Structures are given as structure tokens and as C-alpha cells.
Length: 360
Image (cartoon, rainbow, N blue to C red; front, side, top):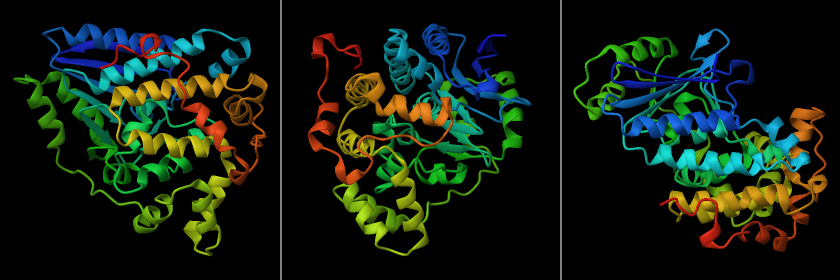
């Protein structure tokens, strides 16, 4: 059975991510299948709208997508495999295609939605979450940054939530995701299968009516703001990560202590890079943000040797050796050299040769 099941049912293009053992983590083949499918349906008059879901261990729904295949990243980096560069270029093109898609694209974000899973759902015209949704951009834990357009969509969250979510990798539930403007409607997970069946069996008049019908579902759960929002804004509005840590480490407040602990576990270098990424992206178009992120991901694997890459080391500690003891260089936020951070934002390509030059 294919890792991506794509079929037209009624007037709906139905996509099911079907790699449940890997929590539907995206491979290069899956990225290519998704891109080809969406491009072919864009011009198909039978397809009014597209619906995408994941498969859990028990069947459809239950898990959406845990992100990119980080074991592949580690292996490809060590082997100097050009497929690694292809993966990010093609994934970011797919993210752009979804954000700019000419038909309604409805993402059923049940279960785990992280990293690359956010990339194929945040551009949806309707983003459905449930009480089982576990949403995050936890990349700083593996010495990476929230990519797949993360700079663009996180920087547009209310207040300084974008900086908080990007730096800490904090997990959101469904109702929190709606309040954070990272989802449109939170519905009980038991409603997803009946909605999916109704989508494929209803004689919708046009694309807009499909979208309207999903958003008008009765039984939506009330959005719930992340606590403590005023403190999040105050701390994560500070000019540097060091200033943020200084403030929260000098407080005995429970949230401050937990947040400080989370930040201290993450790659110090990448915390600096991520703060700069989010703040730059706030005034960027999606296409420019994705070009910046393509530069950043190149530097994550190539600015230092593979043996010294924060990203390769972070993946080793989490997913390969699983010792959960990454050897970050340097070990502390306060020791990071600002000139090294600045290098991440220097593109290795001229605008005419950039791999994502065609994105508008």
C-alpha cells in the first residue's frame, strides 16, 4: 500500500497519509506524490476541493504527520547524499503550493501535527483540530529551526506567541491551536469520519460551499488562550534570548522555571538563529520566508562540518543513539558568537540561482 493514498471521491480530492508506523513522517517520495497530486487536481474540473488526513494505528485519523523523516536527514548528511537538498527544496515548494492553492484545501489535523505536518496543513483554507491534537514546532530540540514556512505562520500568531512556540517547541492542544490562530475550528474527533463521508457524498454546488459547510459544523469547542499570555508577551518580547533567560531564571514562578529549563535544553546557537528568523519573517512574504528558510537549512547542515553540525548532533541524541544528551557547541546561550549567527542569514546562492527563485 502506498504511503500517500490519493483518490477523487465525488467532487473531493481525498489524500490520506498512510505511514502510521512512522506517524506519517514525510519522505522525499511522499513530498513528490503530494506535489504531483495537488498539481494535477488544480486543473481538474471534477475536483471542487481537497481534503487531507493521516492514518493512525487503528485506521484513518488519530495521527496527522510528525514531520520530516529525521533519521533520513542524519543518514543523508553523513553520506553527503544530494537527496537531502532535494528534500528541503521540494518540501518548501509543496508548502508554497498549499498556501497559494486555487481550491479549498481542508486539513484534518487530528493527533500529532509537528514540523513538516505543520507545513502541509498551515496553508490550508480550513484547518480542523480535535481534542487529540498535539501541535508543535519542536525543532530547536534537534538543533534545527521551525522551517516549512514556520517563520511566516508563527510570526503571525497573537502577541509574542510566535517567539515562544518557536524557541521552546511548546505543545498546543486543539483549542489552544485555534486561539493561537494555527487552526480554524476544533471539533470532537468522533465527528471526523462522518464529516469525511459527507464531504465525498454531498452534491456541493461550488468550492466555497464546501469550505462554508465544514466551518459551520455544530459542536465546535471553545478556543482557549495559552496561559500566561501577558507574561509570554513580556518575556518573549525582550531583545535577546539571554535577556529572556535572565528574566525567567530570576523568578521563582512555576511557568518561568519550566520555560527556562526547556530553553536550556535546546541548541544555544539555534535559539539565537530562530529568534532572528521569527522577527525577520514577521515583515516577509511567504515566498521570501521560504527562501530564507532554504538558506538556513543549507547552513544547518553545511556551515560547519557534519561532525560539528548542531542539527546532525541533535538528531543523533534524540533519534539515533537516543541518549538525549546532545553536545551543543557552545553549551550556553551566553557564549554564542553573534557573527556565527549572522552567517546563517547569508544566502549561499545569488537570487538568480536560488533553488526557490520561482516562488512568487
